[in-house]
Length: 321
Image 1 (cartoon, one colour):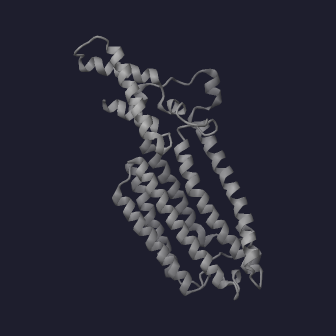
Image 2 (cartoon, one colour; image 1 turned 135 degrees about the vertical axis):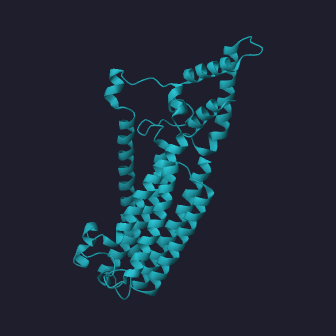
Image 3 (spheres, one colour; image 1 turned 90 degrees about the vertical axis):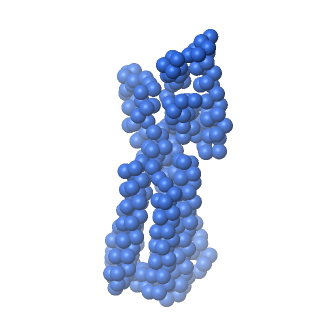
């Protein structure tokens, strides 16, 4: 099997669930080999040029790998096309847990700040309800963004109706690296998340409708020593450097993954120490009876994000090897 067929098969299975890729890849390879043999006919010792030409014809006949992958999926992907589907699933797996944690922390802060006596049952009830709403909103927003982006990348409905969209060819396959494209897309999304995290100390409470609690100031204690904020931003900068390296190389490695894990854990330890040794949140957003609950919820949220990030990162790395 030539490198061209390997690239083609990799492009097909990259749009499929990870647990089914091996079997489907073997099936496609066998199909391509049989079709090439049929085209070569009775030639006992075909020249390399003849074999390459037959292989090219077979791949042209099979068509766009993204379109072929649809035949192997268990469900149609009409709203999110096969080219965007892997990144869409990755975004859902990464963003929704992050949104859930952020919603839980924000709502717990608001609940504790507005109630003199914290009742765990009432707190849990509010967190569950508001978190579900936040998850549904995030899911809808991600779906709409990817659907619109996929429509734009596919050339739009007008081109399809007018018949101006060009047919797929092997030449396009040579310029296509589905794994590299996915790694670049994930790196861009991670950079966006890091920018949002860097802005958290600067976000006013009025942005999430709790500005009346501290006159629209930030969530962070204004008396917090600047060294803690500089350390926080330093960690985020180092994480951003790793994502930039992935973006430039269009690939990742075990060394980068391990470095990212070390940075994530170190930052989690840094934030845990900060939260447990001083008042990080704005004084007006906490109460004497709820301060300890806020600390526990925030620390749990930090470690939940770190653990989920490692799971998501290693799964993506294993899928892209």
